[in-house]
Figure: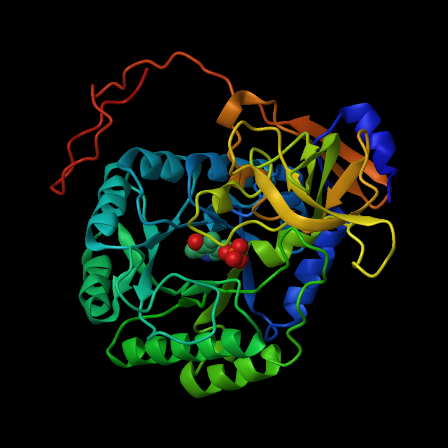
Length: 429
Ligand SMILES: *Cc1c(COP(=O)(O)O)cnc(C)c1O
């Protein structure tokens, strides 16, 4: 591994360090957890850094993308654009048009309106696109991470409405029915919850298939877990490959011949382990008996999504945290430099003799690290992102946010198009 202090001298802190070897290892480990031939989408949402995405591509993943920027990042990383899966519950007509122009040909559609927008765009540009219908179809399971379906949901189409939408997809001249997309949960608690969710998914898919919904591709989503901002290893899914294959044999006859082709999606399992955030200690202070380590990065670099209160509070534990039995440790609140009391990375973290000028390294932040943070809040520069491959330096970059003038759009309005036949878009230029 490179010398961290040396990297900080060169590139400053805070600093994200990514090791591409870990990306390759995690994809290999995910593959071992899946039946042979299972296709993997890497979700750029977890970390769109082109070097990380390129490492996932080199291991045979395709890209799951959900914005123009992610399409561009995926293309830059070497993903074949025609194999990208474009997902998300709110796709604007402009974003769809842009994606189709770039060559995206596969969309997950999340409602009738969403489908019509994709279909209209495909029609206008005289292209055929393939649609997966995202299904909100599995009854609630227990013991899971962040659930995204099961009851009322902003995601997907209720089970009862899938058949009708599938017929619309088949009937439209510019769309083809590709299959079904499920993504009911993320960060499953354990292997049993993951398998339980997969079997719910397969039962729902089998019921739809029996109803006559064509399924060339079945994307069963994921939920593969990873530690976040604490030391630890990726979970091993030692029995998943066999048990999932058995469940597929039961519910999805033909899958071994690629009919349907089975896909999974993962962001965090692929990327989490490759990233470490290195923070400098700017101050160590005491207040009413509590010690604070004031770091040079906080929720502007990490865990911004937790700071919204929507997710569990962030509780980062750096590699420097010793177990409390070791002498010389002090339990500190690790806080960032932002002028807000929510800028807390961890509470009561046992650091060994924290001192001004020292460094802490928060591990397992390769997924949902930088781009999931409150990057623009309070205007500090983004951390440098340094990519290594084992000992070799691959790249060092910094995301820049800058304000630029924006011209009014040619249509005079960026509002969503109403749900009726296409209003012609004037071509630009
Ligand atoms: C967020 C998301 C993913 C990635 O989830 P991870 O927990 O990072 O694996 C995959 N697919 C969809 C549709 C998502 O919204």
